[in-house]
Amino acid sequence: MKLYLSVIGISMALIAAVNLIAQTAPPLYVVIAVIWCTSLQFALDGFWAILINKMPDRWFGITNPLYRVSKKEQALYKKLRVRLWKDKVWELGGLGGFSKKILREPSNPDYIEKFIIECNKGVLTHRLSYPVGFLAMLTLQGICSLTIALPVAVVNLFLNILPTLALRYNTPKLQRMLGRMKRN
Image (cartoon, rainbow, N blue to C red; front, side, top):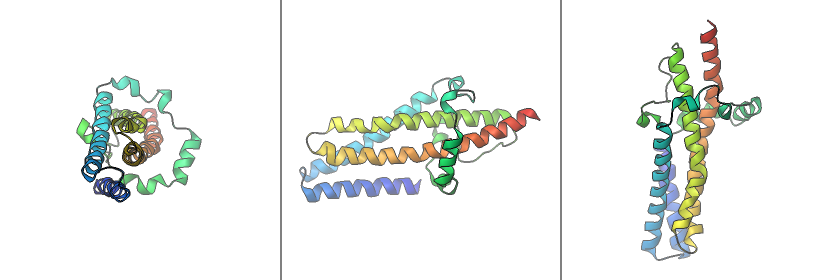
């Protein structure tokens, strides 16, 4: 969490500093615009999380083809070394009632299935946040939509891609674990 907040804080400071140096807008407008765009990202990401958390679990089940992870995708995650950094990714699933930070009941098939469903919900939440982050560009005028809102949206995109990769990396392992349990 500290890492994510640091990235967000440093990004906000850099975006504001560049805009202040370039004099893209009056200083107070720059500061307010950076805070506004960042706050809007949090609000929109939170909106998706709440909305998706209310959806029926059956839409996110292990048989849903939308959440299958191909062998090529798994190979990509290995190449990106997701295993080495995935635990540093900010996990806020606990706010919705199910934390995916630690596998608490590794021998309970119902728990593993719920874990997979929650991973799939997380994937959809983060994927929907990719384009939504760019909506902030519509709220600023002139060059600031490109010099403030766009960089904030890019940071938001990056910070949403990382958990998506971590969730997608973990899902096939959980599915294999569940498959072994159901066979035994």
